[in-house]
Length: 155
Image 1 (cartoon, helix red, strand yellow):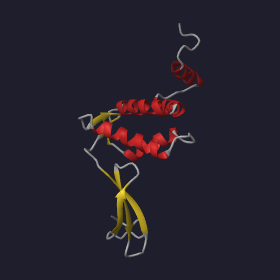
Image 2: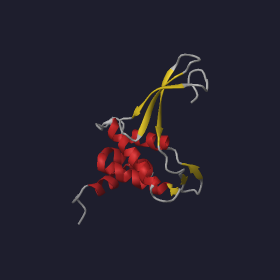
Image 3: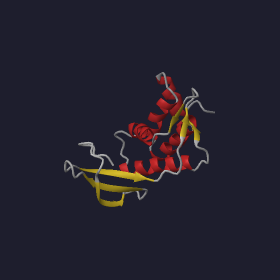
Image 4: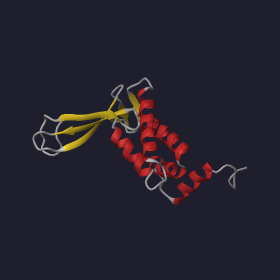
């Protein structure tokens, strides 16, 4: 593992233990060249996933990109960060277990929305506003009215 401080490629592992989610390993590392200490996380990856965008473009699945979009939707919400990590790990495991290495971006979005809906409605609406490309306040209004059972105008 390359040292993030000096670039030395000969770093040493000083401590390894399961991370809080018990799905990854947390490693404390030390660089003998500069004395820097840093932490890395190691996760199991069942297969290399490829995302097929709606434009047909293909790109490697990026867990960090998924995590960023979910954390943006969850920003300032009263959700435990560990719960968010568990949700992200669950989504990735679900994607890996689909049996195919090529996954449509739409399928990923649907799985994320399904997970967010179970945890936090506000985050669900925030994510949906980007995922479904809301253009006006009416788009929000229509979407939120679908969330409310027995809302006025539904007969």
